Length: 310
Image (cartoon, rainbow, N blue to C red):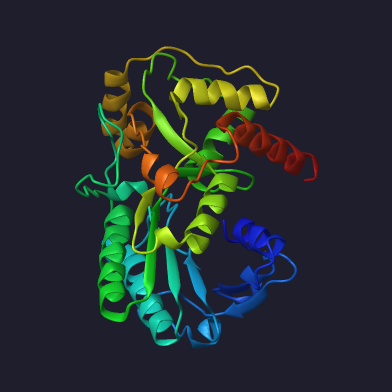
Protein backbone atom coordinates (compact mmCIF):
# COMPACT_ATOMS: atom_id res chain seq x y z
CA UNK A 1 0.00 0.00 0.00
CA UNK A 2 2.82 2.41 0.87
CA UNK A 3 4.54 1.97 -2.47
CA UNK A 4 1.30 2.53 -4.40
CA UNK A 5 0.53 5.70 -2.44
CA UNK A 6 4.05 7.10 -2.79
CA UNK A 7 4.06 6.44 -6.54
CA UNK A 8 0.78 8.31 -6.99
CA UNK A 9 1.85 11.21 -4.77
CA UNK A 10 5.11 11.61 -6.68
CA UNK A 11 3.22 11.51 -9.98
CA UNK A 12 0.92 14.25 -8.67
CA UNK A 13 3.88 16.48 -7.83
CA UNK A 14 4.08 16.01 -4.05
CA UNK A 15 7.38 15.92 -2.18
CA UNK A 16 7.26 12.50 -0.54
CA UNK A 17 9.08 11.31 2.55
CA UNK A 18 8.54 7.64 3.35
CA UNK A 19 9.06 6.52 6.94
CA UNK A 20 9.99 2.83 6.87
CA UNK A 21 11.02 0.34 9.55
CA UNK A 22 14.46 -0.28 8.05
CA UNK A 23 16.58 0.36 4.98
CA UNK A 24 15.50 -2.96 3.46
CA UNK A 25 11.86 -1.82 3.49
CA UNK A 26 12.97 1.38 1.80
CA UNK A 27 14.12 -0.58 -1.25
CA UNK A 28 10.47 -1.16 -2.13
CA UNK A 29 9.70 2.55 -2.31
CA UNK A 30 9.59 4.30 -5.71
CA UNK A 31 12.43 6.44 -7.00
CA UNK A 32 12.06 10.02 -5.82
CA UNK A 33 10.76 9.29 -2.34
CA UNK A 34 12.98 10.36 0.54
CA UNK A 35 13.50 7.31 2.76
CA UNK A 36 13.72 7.66 6.55
CA UNK A 37 14.13 4.45 8.61
CA UNK A 38 12.41 4.78 12.01
CA UNK A 39 12.79 1.27 13.43
CA UNK A 40 9.99 -0.67 15.08
CA UNK A 41 6.67 1.14 15.37
CA UNK A 42 5.27 1.45 18.86
CA UNK A 43 5.00 3.60 21.94
CA UNK A 44 8.67 4.69 21.87
CA UNK A 45 9.33 5.29 18.16
CA UNK A 46 11.38 8.40 17.38
CA UNK A 47 9.60 10.17 14.50
CA UNK A 48 11.54 13.45 14.65
CA UNK A 49 13.61 13.02 11.46
CA UNK A 50 10.65 11.78 9.47
CA UNK A 51 8.37 14.65 10.51
CA UNK A 52 10.65 17.67 10.19
CA UNK A 53 9.14 20.16 7.72
CA UNK A 54 6.17 17.94 6.83
CA UNK A 55 2.70 19.39 6.15
CA UNK A 56 0.63 16.19 6.01
CA UNK A 57 1.09 12.65 7.30
CA UNK A 58 -0.58 9.48 6.01
CA UNK A 59 -0.33 6.64 8.52
CA UNK A 60 -0.58 3.23 6.87
CA UNK A 61 1.68 1.01 8.96
CA UNK A 62 -0.03 -1.53 11.19
CA UNK A 63 0.27 -4.98 12.67
CA UNK A 64 -2.01 -7.04 10.44
CA UNK A 65 -2.22 -10.20 8.34
CA UNK A 66 -0.99 -12.42 11.19
CA UNK A 67 -1.73 -15.89 9.80
CA UNK A 68 -0.17 -17.97 12.58
CA UNK A 69 -0.21 -15.93 15.81
CA UNK A 70 2.90 -16.55 17.90
CA UNK A 71 2.66 -13.76 20.46
CA UNK A 72 1.43 -15.00 23.87
CA UNK A 73 -0.61 -11.80 24.26
CA UNK A 74 -2.03 -10.89 20.81
CA UNK A 75 -4.12 -8.00 22.11
CA UNK A 76 -1.09 -6.34 23.66
CA UNK A 77 0.95 -6.90 20.50
CA UNK A 78 -1.71 -5.28 18.31
CA UNK A 79 -2.21 -2.45 20.81
CA UNK A 80 1.51 -1.61 20.98
CA UNK A 81 1.81 -1.08 17.22
CA UNK A 82 -1.64 -0.02 16.09
CA UNK A 83 -2.91 2.03 19.03
CA UNK A 84 0.10 3.22 21.03
CA UNK A 85 2.25 3.50 17.92
CA UNK A 86 -0.36 5.67 16.23
CA UNK A 87 -0.77 7.81 19.33
CA UNK A 88 3.00 8.33 19.51
CA UNK A 89 3.12 9.37 15.84
CA UNK A 90 0.21 11.79 16.20
CA UNK A 91 1.70 13.47 19.26
CA UNK A 92 5.03 13.88 17.48
CA UNK A 93 3.30 15.15 14.33
CA UNK A 94 1.37 17.80 16.26
CA UNK A 95 4.56 18.94 18.00
CA UNK A 96 6.32 19.19 14.62
CA UNK A 97 3.61 21.44 13.19
CA UNK A 98 1.97 18.90 10.87
CA UNK A 99 -1.32 20.36 9.64
CA UNK A 100 -3.21 17.16 8.82
CA UNK A 101 -2.90 13.45 9.60
CA UNK A 102 -4.79 10.87 7.54
CA UNK A 103 -5.18 7.54 9.35
CA UNK A 104 -6.08 4.37 7.48
CA UNK A 105 -8.14 2.42 10.00
CA UNK A 106 -10.38 -0.58 9.25
CA UNK A 107 -14.04 -1.34 8.64
CA UNK A 108 -13.55 -3.88 11.42
CA UNK A 109 -14.11 -0.96 13.80
CA UNK A 110 -17.77 -1.05 12.70
CA UNK A 111 -17.95 -4.82 13.08
CA UNK A 112 -17.36 -8.09 11.27
CA UNK A 113 -20.85 -8.48 9.78
CA UNK A 114 -23.17 -5.77 8.48
CA UNK A 115 -26.44 -7.70 8.51
CA UNK A 116 -29.41 -6.29 6.60
CA UNK A 117 -28.17 -2.70 6.48
CA UNK A 118 -24.84 -1.52 5.13
CA UNK A 119 -22.35 -0.03 7.57
CA UNK A 120 -22.25 3.77 7.87
CA UNK A 121 -20.18 6.27 9.80
CA UNK A 122 -23.06 6.70 12.26
CA UNK A 123 -22.93 3.11 13.51
CA UNK A 124 -21.84 2.45 17.07
CA UNK A 125 -18.36 0.88 16.88
CA UNK A 126 -18.45 -2.88 17.42
CA UNK A 127 -14.84 -3.98 17.02
CA UNK A 128 -14.33 -7.64 17.96
CA UNK A 129 -10.89 -8.84 16.90
CA UNK A 130 -7.65 -7.64 18.54
CA UNK A 131 -6.74 -5.94 15.26
CA UNK A 132 -10.04 -4.05 15.03
CA UNK A 133 -10.03 -3.16 18.74
CA UNK A 134 -6.53 -1.70 18.40
CA UNK A 135 -7.65 0.35 15.40
CA UNK A 136 -10.62 1.67 17.38
CA UNK A 137 -8.33 2.64 20.25
CA UNK A 138 -6.08 4.44 17.75
CA UNK A 139 -9.06 6.40 16.43
CA UNK A 140 -10.02 7.45 19.95
CA UNK A 141 -6.47 8.62 20.66
CA UNK A 142 -6.37 10.59 17.41
CA UNK A 143 -9.68 12.32 18.12
CA UNK A 144 -8.38 13.37 21.53
CA UNK A 145 -5.10 14.69 20.10
CA UNK A 146 -7.01 16.62 17.44
CA UNK A 147 -9.12 18.32 20.12
CA UNK A 148 -6.09 19.14 22.26
CA UNK A 149 -3.71 20.36 19.55
CA UNK A 150 -5.79 21.54 16.61
CA UNK A 151 -4.00 19.24 14.17
CA UNK A 152 -6.56 18.06 11.63
CA UNK A 153 -7.27 14.32 11.64
CA UNK A 154 -9.03 12.33 8.91
CA UNK A 155 -9.93 8.68 9.42
CA UNK A 156 -10.60 6.20 6.62
CA UNK A 157 -12.17 2.79 7.25
CA UNK A 158 -11.65 0.51 4.24
CA UNK A 159 -12.70 -3.15 3.88
CA UNK A 160 -10.38 -5.84 2.51
CA UNK A 161 -7.89 -4.23 0.12
CA UNK A 162 -6.92 -6.01 -3.09
CA UNK A 163 -4.53 -5.24 -5.89
CA UNK A 164 -1.10 -6.23 -7.23
CA UNK A 165 0.97 -7.84 -4.48
CA UNK A 166 -1.96 -7.69 -2.05
CA UNK A 167 -1.16 -9.52 1.21
CA UNK A 168 -3.41 -11.50 3.50
CA UNK A 169 -6.72 -13.17 2.70
CA UNK A 170 -7.06 -11.83 -0.84
CA UNK A 171 -3.67 -13.20 -1.84
CA UNK A 172 -4.74 -16.59 -0.49
CA UNK A 173 -7.94 -16.49 -2.54
CA UNK A 174 -5.99 -15.77 -5.72
CA UNK A 175 -3.62 -18.63 -4.97
CA UNK A 176 -6.53 -21.05 -4.46
CA UNK A 177 -7.99 -20.03 -7.82
CA UNK A 178 -4.59 -20.35 -9.50
CA UNK A 179 -4.23 -23.90 -8.19
CA UNK A 180 -7.75 -24.80 -9.43
CA UNK A 181 -8.78 -25.75 -5.90
CA UNK A 182 -12.45 -26.76 -5.56
CA UNK A 183 -14.13 -24.38 -3.12
CA UNK A 184 -17.27 -25.28 -1.09
CA UNK A 185 -18.98 -21.91 -1.49
CA UNK A 186 -21.30 -22.48 -4.43
CA UNK A 187 -24.45 -21.94 -2.32
CA UNK A 188 -23.26 -18.89 -0.39
CA UNK A 189 -25.56 -15.90 -0.85
CA UNK A 190 -23.86 -12.95 0.74
CA UNK A 191 -22.72 -9.47 -0.25
CA UNK A 192 -19.36 -7.98 0.63
CA UNK A 193 -17.58 -4.70 -0.09
CA UNK A 194 -13.94 -4.57 -1.17
CA UNK A 195 -11.58 -1.83 -2.30
CA UNK A 196 -8.99 -1.83 -5.06
CA UNK A 197 -5.66 -0.32 -4.02
CA UNK A 198 -5.99 2.34 -6.73
CA UNK A 199 -9.32 3.45 -5.28
CA UNK A 200 -7.96 3.51 -1.74
CA UNK A 201 -4.97 5.61 -2.82
CA UNK A 202 -7.26 8.03 -4.63
CA UNK A 203 -9.47 8.40 -1.55
CA UNK A 204 -6.40 9.04 0.63
CA UNK A 205 -5.32 11.87 -1.66
CA UNK A 206 -8.82 13.34 -1.47
CA UNK A 207 -8.51 13.26 2.32
CA UNK A 208 -5.13 15.01 2.14
CA UNK A 209 -6.35 17.79 -0.12
CA UNK A 210 -10.05 18.45 0.51
CA UNK A 211 -10.81 21.15 3.12
CA UNK A 212 -14.03 19.39 4.20
CA UNK A 213 -12.15 16.22 5.14
CA UNK A 214 -10.75 17.76 8.34
CA UNK A 215 -12.05 16.10 11.49
CA UNK A 216 -14.09 13.52 9.59
CA UNK A 217 -14.35 9.73 9.48
CA UNK A 218 -15.18 8.14 6.14
CA UNK A 219 -16.07 4.61 5.10
CA UNK A 220 -14.63 3.82 1.69
CA UNK A 221 -14.93 0.99 -0.84
CA UNK A 222 -15.24 0.28 -4.56
CA UNK A 223 -18.93 1.16 -4.27
CA UNK A 224 -19.94 -2.26 -5.64
CA UNK A 225 -20.97 -5.19 -3.45
CA UNK A 226 -20.44 -8.77 -4.59
CA UNK A 227 -21.05 -12.29 -3.29
CA UNK A 228 -18.10 -14.52 -2.47
CA UNK A 229 -18.94 -17.04 -5.25
CA UNK A 230 -19.20 -14.25 -7.82
CA UNK A 231 -15.92 -12.78 -6.60
CA UNK A 232 -14.21 -16.14 -7.15
CA UNK A 233 -15.76 -16.41 -10.61
CA UNK A 234 -14.54 -12.93 -11.53
CA UNK A 235 -11.02 -13.65 -10.27
CA UNK A 236 -10.97 -16.90 -12.23
CA UNK A 237 -12.28 -15.20 -15.36
CA UNK A 238 -9.62 -12.50 -15.13
CA UNK A 239 -7.00 -15.29 -14.94
CA UNK A 240 -8.44 -17.13 -17.92
CA UNK A 241 -9.81 -19.91 -15.75
CA UNK A 242 -13.17 -21.32 -14.73
CA UNK A 243 -13.98 -21.25 -11.03
CA UNK A 244 -14.40 -24.63 -9.39
CA UNK A 245 -17.22 -24.21 -6.88
CA UNK A 246 -19.40 -26.86 -5.30
CA UNK A 247 -22.43 -26.36 -3.04
CA UNK A 248 -22.13 -26.56 0.72
CA UNK A 249 -24.54 -24.95 3.18
CA UNK A 250 -23.39 -21.99 5.25
CA UNK A 251 -24.39 -23.82 8.44
CA UNK A 252 -22.14 -26.77 7.58
CA UNK A 253 -19.26 -24.44 6.75
CA UNK A 254 -19.68 -22.69 10.09
CA UNK A 255 -19.66 -26.04 11.88
CA UNK A 256 -16.45 -26.97 10.07
CA UNK A 257 -15.02 -23.60 11.10
CA UNK A 258 -15.72 -24.30 14.77
CA UNK A 259 -14.18 -27.77 14.62
CA UNK A 260 -11.05 -26.56 12.82
CA UNK A 261 -10.65 -23.30 14.73
CA UNK A 262 -11.24 -21.31 11.54
CA UNK A 263 -14.56 -19.67 12.45
CA UNK A 264 -13.24 -16.18 11.69
CA UNK A 265 -12.06 -17.17 8.21
CA UNK A 266 -15.35 -18.95 7.45
CA UNK A 267 -17.32 -15.91 8.59
CA UNK A 268 -15.40 -13.71 6.18
CA UNK A 269 -16.25 -16.10 3.34
CA UNK A 270 -19.93 -16.60 4.15
CA UNK A 271 -21.11 -13.46 5.97
CA UNK A 272 -22.16 -10.13 4.49
CA UNK A 273 -20.18 -6.95 5.02
CA UNK A 274 -21.59 -4.05 3.05
CA UNK A 275 -20.37 -0.47 3.23
CA UNK A 276 -22.32 2.69 2.43
CA UNK A 277 -19.92 5.28 0.96
CA UNK A 278 -22.51 8.02 0.51
CA UNK A 279 -20.72 10.35 2.96
CA UNK A 280 -17.37 10.46 1.17
CA UNK A 281 -19.15 10.77 -2.18
CA UNK A 282 -21.12 13.76 -0.92
CA UNK A 283 -18.66 15.54 1.37
CA UNK A 284 -15.53 15.15 -0.77
CA UNK A 285 -17.22 14.71 -4.18
CA UNK A 286 -15.24 11.48 -4.43
CA UNK A 287 -16.01 8.68 -6.86
CA UNK A 288 -13.96 5.47 -7.15
CA UNK A 289 -11.89 5.88 -10.35
CA UNK A 290 -11.74 2.11 -10.92
CA UNK A 291 -14.62 -0.37 -11.09
CA UNK A 292 -14.48 -3.68 -9.27
CA UNK A 293 -14.10 -5.45 -12.61
CA UNK A 294 -11.16 -3.25 -13.62
CA UNK A 295 -9.46 -3.71 -10.27
CA UNK A 296 -9.78 -7.49 -10.33
CA UNK A 297 -8.53 -7.67 -13.90
CA UNK A 298 -5.43 -5.58 -13.12
CA UNK A 299 -4.79 -7.62 -9.98
CA UNK A 300 -4.99 -10.90 -11.90
CA UNK A 301 -2.82 -9.60 -14.74
CA UNK A 302 -0.08 -8.60 -12.32
CA UNK A 303 -0.31 -11.95 -10.54
CA UNK A 304 0.09 -13.81 -13.84
CA UNK A 305 2.96 -11.53 -14.88
CA UNK A 306 4.77 -12.12 -11.58
CA UNK A 307 4.39 -15.87 -12.02
CA UNK A 308 5.97 -15.75 -15.49
CA UNK A 309 8.93 -13.80 -14.13
CA UNK A 310 9.73 -16.28 -11.36
